[in-house]
Length: 388
Image 1 (cartoon, rainbow, N blue to C red):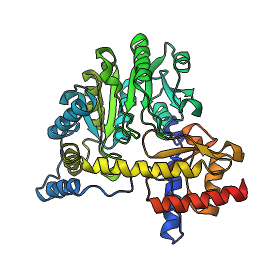
Image 2: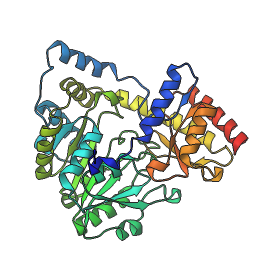
Image 3: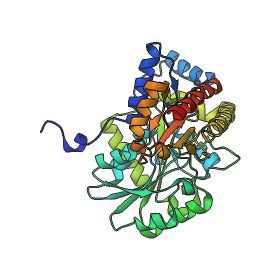
Image 4: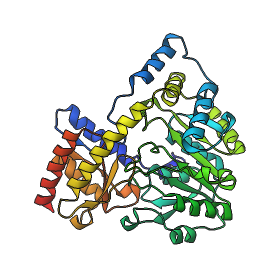
């Protein structure tokens, strides 16, 4: 057998596949409205770019410590304390090449063959793949739109076994925009403490929360859950820095020391220049985040109102992130086939829900301009009226 078993069952990311196809059509001059993107459409703020240019001009272009430069880790520690009420020391923090890389490292570090990892569905499509690559088994908890796609107490408790090693918590969520409230987080924390499993808390969208709601970090809810939580975040979404590839994780000292050791043999350090840019993002003017958030909420409101006036499709109002998870069940079409039909026939790019664990939904990103949203919604409405 030419390929290792660990990779033979891993498929290419469908989100990247659809996005690449849409971008290719755009380059060929096709007028595509792209609702597939998983990144802000705003430029990286000028002061962040300036910090990177300064680093280049000053020759900060060599290897750094594999877990990240001390100045950035201290900035991250201050961010956790100020924004999340979590007290992490710099020795508990590892900077990686994006939050995806951070999560991958954590799974590789804490999971063994036969371990089980609880993942609420819909889920970010890379979670199950990364769990499998670590030799563990994804245990999926089904949710529904009636509960804003959040796992209930009964559903979560029913999935816990002696093999449960971790639970993945993504709040706000990709693809649904769901936000776990304080009481829900307290219950999850109680389960983790009672049954002694880790919570991997993916908080990459934490600053993009709407309607005056508050994001709460589960690690802030007490010493016992703090000792069982690995908190993951990064600068990609909040500061429009997806291509800079800086993410970070923080957690128990022994876990993070092992993560650092693993990374030192895998990728070594993240980009030196990007680390300086990330340091500026976390420590300098935060108005750029607030302005982006205000604009995203306007776009969300427009997209949600337009979707819910189209016959046979509908959606809930996402509380965070920049996605709408649209119910297509009345169209009696699988999400992959529908997504390809919309791209080919309506010139609208959306992401199928099937790889997120929900085949009767598609994900639309409102990380695009208002005029683009209006045009795309017009095309979507016309296509559904014609084909639905």
